[in-house]
Structures are given as C-alpha cells and as structure tokens.
Amino acid sequence: MHRFAVFFLGLAGLLFAQQPPYDIFPAAEVPYYRVRYEASAKQGELIFPANYTVWIPPGVKTVRGVIVHQHGCGEGSCKSGLTGAFDLHWQALAKKHDCALLAPSYGQPEKANCQMWCDPRNGSDAAFQKGLADLGVKSGHPELARVPWALWGHSGGGHWAGGMTLLHPERVVAAWLRSGVPLLHSNAARSEIKTHILPDAALTVPMMCNLGTKEGFSVKDGRFAGAWPANEAFFAAVRGRGGVIGVSIDPLTAHECGNQRYLAIPWLDACLTARLPSEAGGSLKPMPAAGAWLAPLPAVGTAVITPVAVAQFTGAKEKSVWLPNESISKAWTQYMKDTAVSDTTPPPAPTNIRVSGNELTWDAEADLESGLAHFIIERDGEVVATIPERGKNPFGRPVFQNLQYSDTPTQPLVAKRFTDTKAEAGKQYRYRVVAVNTAGLKSQ
Image 1 (cartoon, one colour):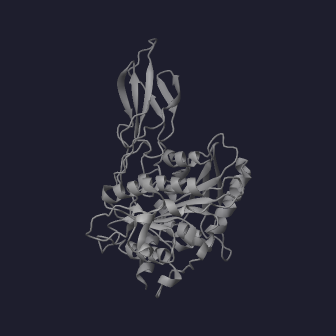
Image 2: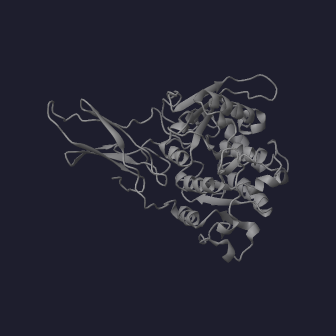
Image 3: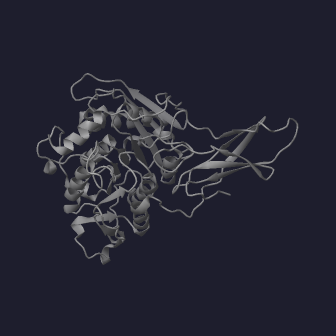
C-alpha cells in the first residue's frame, strides 16, 4: 500500500481522548441554526448521519461567504465538531467579513472508514451543499447556498477541505489544511485512497499546508509519520505548477492542532480581505501577485529563513513557500520558530453587563488576532475573580472556551458568568469586567 494511503486509512480507527460530555448538542438558538440528515443507504450518498450548525453574525443583512471549520476523523473528533460554530475566536473572523461560521459534525462510528465522508465525492459534498441551502431557508439568508467558502480542516478534515478545493475552485476563497491533504493522481503509486486531479483553476486558490513537526518532518516514525511526505508531495505538485500555496510547520506538536489558529485566522483574514467579491454574486478576486512574500521551503535541521517580498526573492519560486503579504510573513516566521505569534491589539471591551442578585453576566467578542484567554472581575476597583482561573488547552495557549483536539470548544460551553458569593445582601457594589486575550493584553 502507498505510504500516503497508510496515513489516511490509519486515521479511521482513532478515538482521541476527550472528557465527557462531548456528545451533547449545544442549543442552536438564534443566531445559531442547525440541520441534520440521517445516514443514507443509496449508492453515492453519505453513509453517516450529518449535522451542520451555522452561526450568522447578528445584524448582517447579506452574508458574503461561509467559513467552514471541519473536524477530523474518528468518533471523538466527529463529536467535537458539534461546538465548532460556537467558537468566539472563529466568530470574530466571520463577523469581520460578514460571513457565516459553519461547523459540520459527521456521525462516523469508531473504526468506520473515514474516507466515506472525508472524500467529498462519497456524499459529503452533496450533503454540505444541501445543508447550506436548507440553512439558508431556515435562517432567512438564502444566499448561503451561493456565496464563496473559506475552508479550514484538520486531519481528515484537511483531506476534505483540499478535496473540495480541487472539486470547486471557483467557490473557494482559501483553504487551510492542518495535518491532512488530498492525494493527487500525479503523486499516487499504488493506493487504496481515491485520487484527485489538480485542475488549473485550483492553482489560483490560496492554500496552506500546516502540520506538526512530529508528523514525519523531524520525527520520522510513529502513527502520523506519513503526514509530511503527503504534504510535501501535495505542495510540490501545486507550487510546481505556479499555485499559491505555503507550508507552515508547528515546531512543538504532532497531530494535535496546537497554536495553529494564531496563524490560520490572520492568514484567512488576509485571503478573505483580498478575494471576497465587492458585490453579492460577484466572482472571487485573484490574490494580488505583487503583494506576496516568499521563503525557501523549510528543511530539517536548518534555521527558518525570513521571507522577502516576491520581487526580492532569488531562489526557485516553484519551490518557495507562498505567503499573501508582509504581515503574514512576519507571523509565519514567528510561528515557525516557537508558535508565539505576537499581537499588539487589545481585545474588545465586554458589553451589556447584567446583574441579577449576586450573579453577573456579560457579552464579549474575541480579539481577531489572539482570541480570549479569560475575564477579570473587579468589584469596587479590586480584583475579585478571574473567569476561568485558567483556561484548559493541553495542546496550546490556554483559552477561555477551552479547546479539544480538533480545535473546538469543550462541552459544556463555558458561560460568561460570575457569582459573587461574598456580596452582602442590601449593599451596593460597582463591578467591572475586563477581557484578556491570549497574548496577555487587556481590554478597556
């Protein structure tokens, strides 16, 4: 069997440890909407049940695009997809561009063949597009069925996102492929994985191959050792034909997502800014060629080489890492060294603080660059609590909503709530809530 096939088929039987309850549906109340489709026995249709949950930014009159957060293979990862649309950090990206945030969740039983959903041609493409149409009717935004997609996928989800890009390049703004890529016909020798053809139109779609260094880059053995050869081959095929594709390697992780969102979200932000149509129904814009920055493809044991503007690059462009602009090139350089992508912008201040008895609740949006780490509660000018005391994320920076293996919030969703158990009845207090992002910057 081809080594790339071994990598992808090996994902089918994985169950990543998560703490229950991780299989409960968060309530899909406005501005959230959900549709569910049961498994089909018809030839060519999806053999697993599927849930599609979408968040639409309140107040948006016309949705300009859909950001898709696609989980990976295995029963645990599939269930973790149930919370993807509730992620405040990803919502900040969606809101900036008047986009919906969609998170699929496929009901793949443990040890079932992941390819039966992560290859879009096995029914998940059709189910996804049906979901968009039905969610459009349900939400009063029928344009959901027509607008472009920005795709993020982990593991088998990267395989799916890449496959959708190759099948529908005219619809895809950009694709971030974390630890999973589709297998191209030109790269396959003998494989049980069905291959894809690389169409010319896909060469204009920005793509990023992203993986952990322990997935065959610096660590050559183990369960995920096939990831780097697969990514390297996919990158070479696309870049060799002039495609706008990059590679970013997390120096700290294996298959877990780590801190990739602190590069992925700004990267997608740059692509959305450049490519979304100016008017509803318009075609996607090409990435500005003159604004790109390039860097040599990373190699084991060598220092990260700082990217330069495309006009200053003297190496082989067909082998270079493509980056959309100078700002992203700086973030990429930081990420490649230690994933500590810096930030100088504080998060938005919390709003609509409400008091009921001795309980405080509030609204808050995440910082686009660095998300939310926690909230500080002040009473009469003194700090009385940090909510949560420490966010849980065994794979990267601690965050307010906690994170699961497939980069989604844990269940139950963390509430923006504080109960002041030391408040005295009948006494008046003045409270203040301060947001803190994962770079340690405080809101007003």
